[in-house]
Amino acid sequence: MIRTVTILAATAALTASTFAASAQTNPTGVWVNDERSTAVRVVRCGEALCGTVAWLREPRDKQGQPKVDRHNSNPKLRQRPLMGLPVLLGMKPSGENRWSGHIYNADDGRTYVSHIQMTSANAMQVQGCVLGGLICRKMNWARDTDGRYGAKKK
Image 1 (cartoon, rainbow, N blue to C red):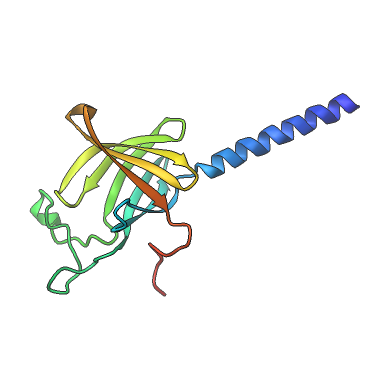
Image 2 (cartoon, rainbow, N blue to C red; image 1 turned 180 degrees about the vertical axis):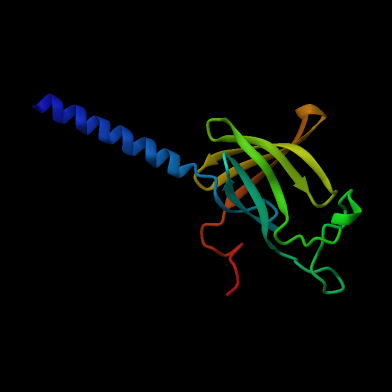
């Protein structure tokens, strides 16, 4: 009887710790880039992760108009608003706490191979790579834990 209780307790503890670890590394939510200029809302889209611009420190251009995707290589897409713009595209699991796919950079209108990795419950490292992944730029994103960024206005 004691052995059965011990096994059940150990199984429950292992299950709880596994659940806690996966909850701690949940990449969904709102993330702020290291420059604190943009927040991205990351959601599940099927088996992948996707992310859209949820907040901009400077959402309007010098003329007071909402910023648009003006650097896009496709002229038909240059008038789409940056707010709500898809930037993390088809990020599929590629290891423990790691996803790979593509990232769109509205600053130059290009899409790059990308990897994201949770480094803690509230920190994510984001890479955009060129030349088949030989050259990568790393960014650190912080989870919006206080709801300050990316909140929908009521």
